[in-house]
Amino acid sequence: MTWRPSPYKFQCETGVPGYGTVPISHNRSFLKVVAKTFSIIGELTNAKSGARIADLSRKLNQPKASVFRILFTLQELGYVRKDAATSAYQLTEQFRLFRGDEARETLRRTARPFLERLLGNFEQTVNLAILDRGQVLYVDILEGLRSVRMAATVNTYAPIHATALGKALLAFLAPAEAEKILSERPLARLTPRTTTSISALLKHLAETRARGYAVDNEEVDLGARCVAAPIFNSQRRPFAAVSVSGPVSHMRHAKIKEMAQAVREACRKISERMGFADGPESGGRKNMYGT
Image 1 (cartoon, one colour):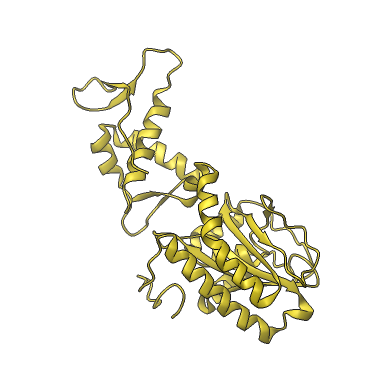
Image 2: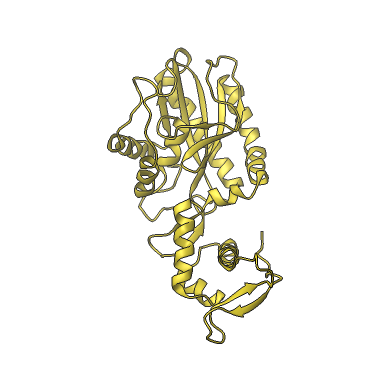
């Protein structure tokens, strides 16, 4: 998507010629703050590596304070994130998916052949989900031949702290961001095995990141296990995940390792088709999939 100029005329907001110009309309219902917000979103859409406040202020002829307040609000709502190393702001996957069902359909269509392959290999239920406002949203489910009865259906949410899908996503976010997401809502105890302590979960997420996949060991449904890995976008950020789930009797610990390797490989290929390029991380890990 390429941002195109607004059809509206521009005027000076601050009274200083050439500074603080915003799109205007003569209709009294027109809100300048909304226009400024979408001007910023338009610039971020075109800025592959993000944009800093000073850059946006200069390009849009807006005061830095106004740009900061808009970005802060978008960040609080989950539509923008700030890169701690560069101070550049980028649109999050939440915003990209918010634009409509087209992006989700692209993900579903891209992932479907790999989901079908996992189903054929293991005959267990295969799930595809995205990170949406701090929760897991299912976008595709392929029922397995040996699946246990679970509540998950397409277009429903699941708790991020207990599902393998959620933990796979959280583990590859920055620890501070993962902690923020976990602190936003109560961590419900769904079974006696559910972890509800943020500190314990953060430790578990570090272990998950080290091995490259997440496990739900009867933490959502008693009698069911699940293994999941993340899908990354072109900014090397996890925005979706794939899991294989089934009854404990068919998902012994030795089998989980085999499934995990297959799920990670499927996610790597899906990520590549979504624009991700694997390689060295700044944090020292050889690459996101550990190969």
